[in-house]
Amino acid sequence: MRFRDLFKFLFGPVVFLLLFLVPPLPMVYDASLIVGASMLKAPQIALGGMIWIASWWIFEVVPLGVASLLSPLIFSLLGFVSWQDSLTSFMDSIIWVFMGGFALARAFQVWGLDRRIAFKVSTIYKGENPIFSAFFIACLPAFLLTVTGSITASTTIVYPIVVAYLSSMGFVRGSSFAEATMLSLAQASTAGAMLFLISTPPNLIAKRVIENSIPGVTLTFLDWFIVGGIHAIIGLIVSWILAFKLI
Image (cartoon, rainbow, N blue to C red; front, top):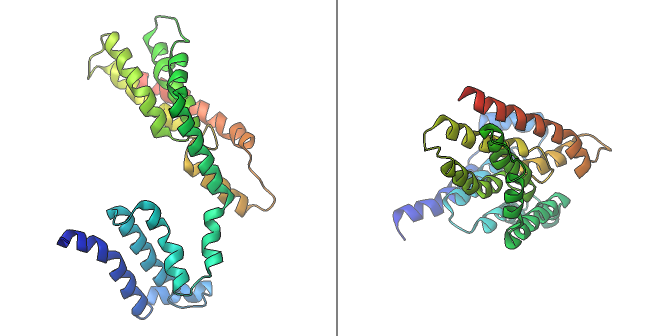
């Protein structure tokens, strides 16, 4: 094993072991007293575990799925939490919404539905105004395809269509119109992140945080669409206008 690989493998465990063995650091000790932690070194040990997991994740020492299981493995084996408590979060309902979104995105890709939607939307506008053409060819398809669960995927799907359009219209690389079109494409995907609950994973995390913070509140797909859809549409239109006005 090369030194670099050995360093990647040992860095996280060594840092965790050091933080586990040394006495509580002053700031850790004070924080533990404030929150009433049963173990004074609890934040310090948690930090060590986070560094271990993050290092193996970043360096890809093990498959990412295995790295995500380090947390329950480490803290359950050391007796800080029970196996039931540590593994319950992996079966949270929000995880299954993630899985449903991934399955939906995969189905779109397998049957080519994402590309068909993009092509169909791009042919709605029949006029000759290039700015409006850019909206229907670049912005609107990327905006709607965030339903696939990834703003990156939606941009990737529409990108070749936009490049082909710009080439056919004679807009060379570096032209202000081409730059504005590409910028509006990216901004449309970003605006679309607020459109659906599954448009991007942080939406689901926000749903869980809101529901846990406010008793009795449950966010449905329709609730999210009513609020997020307005913000998304405003963001889409404003970013499209600004892209072509400022560039």
